[in-house]
Length: 382
Image (cartoon, rainbow, N blue to C red; front, top):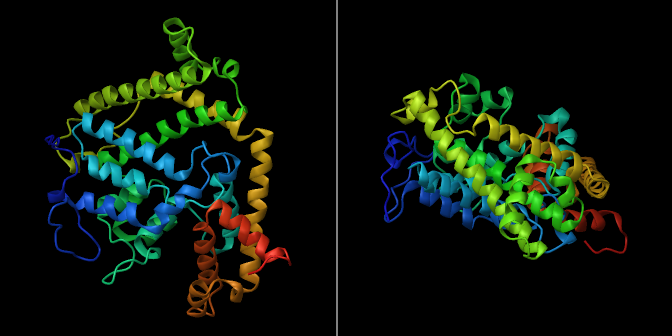
């Protein structure tokens, strides 16, 4: 069923287009084309073996960057449809938002950023944009995926002012302090809803956190009490799924209702009104925002800093840092396609570092572990 878009939604007619002009697709919208290109690219497939919280080999049921991205897209589409926004653009942004993430999750990103300190740093949002603009090599007529401006803008959720000045139009909003389209705002908060709630699920499954601890967190505790009242005899595993499902629904309903209020108060009647708003127009109510932040703090303290997670985090930092150092010391041991890029700029240490960062950032967890072993274990063949 086709749903009429709200006047402030993004649509093909108002798109700022693509860097390399193309004929309009025959039977798809421009944003559907973006979504399809993202799903078919190599960086998207590699998300299957990139960490969310738990390293890939630690268990088959834990979230990966791929399953997380799909869950973000599902939540984002539901919100976009309810608010009469562009579902296809929301989905494209959601599916692409983690394409630039390193192996080993945030620990890998932090380690690579530290390695790149003297060479411009490393931001995973900026790397996601670099993936779709430059690094994917699939088309004869242009580099990258040649996505629409709106999808690229939504992928760039965060960006330093220094990098924003170098990105041209797509980075302009960080300088002018304007807002992205509502679809990008929805994808951003769908990401937050997904990773907070699904990290609860994975954390409980792993045994690193427990129900008793979580009951002190209001967002979880209230849903736990309601599920126990309604279904006191269901199995524990089903109980957890029911609680997480209810938590997600609670957050989505509040987000939709409060966003409707914000849009009404702003009097937005066009996408330009959205862009020129002083504040984001998609957001939680103040009480629910506080509950979400409480859950986020709990996960940071009790899960992400659990000693078992920290041990793997430390291993990841050592692997990424060591790989970077080895390749910078001798770029000739890079795979040919990366070594060729270094040879094209032989006098630039910064350019070499960026090539090395591209190579490491594109690795899956298991590939990075194997590559590190190949470089250090004499018994390993290369």
